[in-house]
Length: 278
Length: 341
Image (tube, rainbow over all chains, first blue to last red; front, side, top):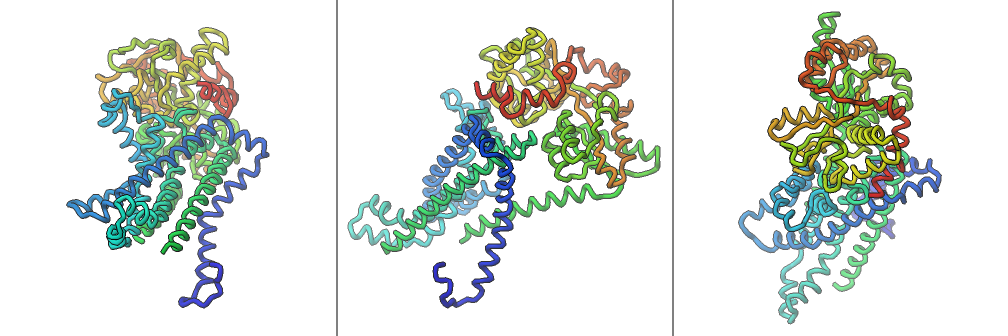
């Protein structure tokens, strides 16, 4: 990007950059700007009172906390899934591969209802979990389960192609040079995959923060306990409180954006490090 | 690469789906000599029966063929759509605040809409009652039982649901009537809401939680919903309990002045709303388990509607605007209770 003036093989850099910016503004920036303009009609004190009221604070904790945790869990298990799908062949592999995409395609409300039915006291899983004292449906744990469900494909689908390109010869070379299995894993495989894992993590996290449809069914939505931030926004809208809703939305946007920037920064740092090593 | 394509296609699909939904709605609203009734969630089945009856009557009376389209969703959400430009000829909402907002924002509805039709423009009422599990194992008889420790009550979120708001106000009114003290009423309502394990967004969600997920000892909901549940799921699973005092939910209707003037449908839209108050309309209403305003029709269906002592929000607790401000706005009494639990 720094030396855009260098000669390029393919023409059209200006056009494509212009189009990119115009498209991005139309689809992303203008709607988001509307949020901030609406919010700007509030005085700072009024804004601060709205976005730091105890109920709203509790919802940030749940929304961001559960989303981070869900994305982390998805990164671990999504990596394992991707590994099995790329490295092993087993009967029904194609079906498993297709199953991974299902949370993409399923309407989130369906996912929410299905999960709630499963984990409720009289559900298939809930009836065994409840006597053990584990309550999933209508608790923050339920929120986490829903977020893990919808975020899984992001990690698998970002890691899979990178893993596909990763030559097994590298691992064999490491082994022949005397590396133990875990050394091969930690020093050869994981560093190469780290950028992809981070991307998957970021996508899963972003998706989870904004998720409403599936969570709403399983959360129980109790104030201070299992109310997610998107629900707070909807609640304010239903009370015709546009400004209050956009204020909370603005906070969500800023925090999400900051977190995504950090993740992207981490990613390019690992990229550069990987480039240096090789 | 495949994954990126997938992600983008996925996002694109969202956009396309959203756009096609919008175009469907606007196409529906644009057809000639048609009416659009924008209404709340659980009135769907009622208006499905009202509409053909009205169309037949209008055809017989004037020879003109009309079509009536209906749109349903959460009451406040629907009001927001009308403010945003959904071309509703008439609105039939869950509570008056959702019509008052149409007066305040853009003057879509006449300020005196309550006076345009009989009974403050409310064609029917339905009291809030309890649905308990068959045989009433916990012996729930009145509001006091719901506020006892160890009981679980399913109520939809009063912030997002008219049903939940009516339940909250019914409990408040009951305690106020019994103790004559606002402090005691507040205490009572906080105890009751401390017994709520799941707050669904709307009435139907609460019904599902109670009937399908097997959560809670009692569901507090509208009588018509309780009767519908028995009809749908069989009378052998649940019993309806009528408390000693309840609230009359009275869903109001109104003409959207600006839209009917622009589309030239004032005559038809007015006739449509008047039809709701006619004996024929009232019978359909009664068959859908709402209590009709017409005395004769009520007599005819008396077996369905046990006598119950009720109070009316505006007569007992003050105007809806005031009630909304004191109890349900951000930082109002409900919020204080919710945060303190």
